[in-house]
Length: 572
Image (cartoon, rainbow, N blue to C red; front, side, top):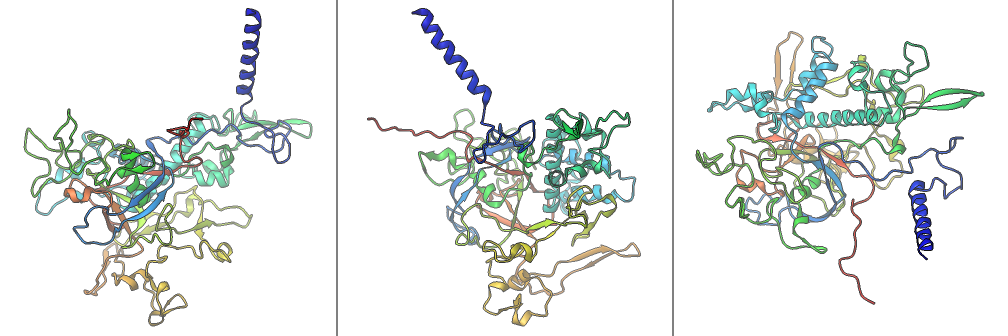
């Protein structure tokens, strides 16, 4: 009896091990053919589990919530009326981007594009935060202009003086560096490539790699080493090559980590306003079954800015301006522990595990500002700011990649020079009628003005502009909101600074298509602005000493990382 009992368990054990070893089926349910066969055919990552959490990120499970002001609107702005929205699951930075994180970006730019070369000097200079934002005409804070960014004392403080455009470019750079690391970690490229094989003509771009992998690292990725033994210079990792029979000869061919491998992460980017507000509120902490128990005024539960926990009772839960002339309490009993900004993670995280979503610094989000949230048009992953682009296709029928001698800079309205695209990135252009013809879901490349009361929405719309403005070159948003024309600043041929401002003094608004939303309160703001529903705006080229940013990333695949089970099961 005992032997039969052991025999049954042995057979069950072998069966279980066999199932685990087999993993997911490698036979197509469509054709019956083998997937990932050594003889050829369709190759695909059938062992993919779920998206890896990128460095610095926290997972935010999506859901529905009331976006906008759910408390009394004492300012009567009427620009954040409550509306029900659904947010897809996503990831967001655990903290704001800090000085040391941004310094790593600057160090990479200076290493790859040396500033002693006049061709590349403006790349580094365009990425530098404006440290002069700390100056105050009636206050002494001069030491901050030279120390806040670089001094180790401020390493883990949030970076400031970064405008919206610079924040976007940092996120693009971060995407490429993280994916470059993943390729090396998973043996698609040899160890040390990201240090030893990079120069102005040989950089890595995630989008270019996925579209045209052979162009990575300036086209060196598939070059053979000087030894002449067939070893590839860069693509020599264990997973980066494969043996293949060609004309009865075994040859080594490169293997790339395309989208179907599921290895490379989606882009780091600025969060949308809806994502930021949802992550800040962290309503999951007030959830009971499938409902929220109440309204939340701050990222923490309760209607006050002080802690009601026994061990920390009375402590402030954020870094903000406590009152007129009071930025941090009295000596020896500092209410929030800071005069200006403060080291990240100085306060408890919210129920999503995200820090400093109220106070410290306000944060850029990706949206273009409009006073209305058009939830009638969309209540799913709401975002205003879509400008759809496509790859420029060259004469060979392949996507073009920007070469080192094709560097193009853009002069911002305040005279700052900013790089449009780094060498090695895809060359892109706005979509045209080829992509929009007979489509129902979008009809043009630039959708920033969609259903916002602009000229195209007006009764007099004709041929793209109101009848009385057909000859005007003024942007539609300027016509609608009577905002000023963008200022122009540049260095003329004689090397002198020239600036031009809109002379009209009766403008009624600053809202344009280049005006971006920033969220949350800062060390300079009163408690009113700590409410995640509050929204303010500035031109995208402006930087301040109280606005920073954090990155987000889209979630691919399942909504949740944990399988949901019923709390109560019926009996019988």
